[in-house]
Image 1 (cartoon, rainbow, N blue to C red):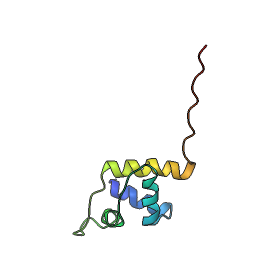
Image 2: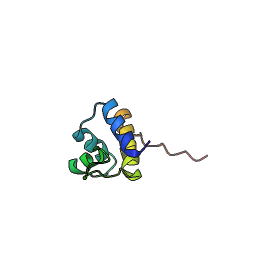
Image 3: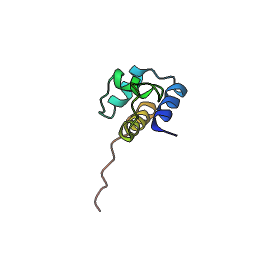
Image 4: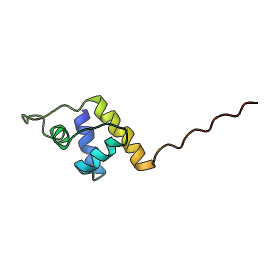
Length: 81
């Protein structure tokens, strides 16, 4: 399964719009545009199709965790004995 197929399936399963995906990516300081996203969601034989790279998928998944669970609480420093 390609990264493009994973992104498509997640978008449908979670009922996300392009704006939602952009906001999720912003949670991990990854910037993209609607144009770049639409190229990822096109059919492979379309002239404007772009292969989804690992970096985009990785950042989307990390942002999705923050979006669904909330930000990770800060770790407490261990007290010295």
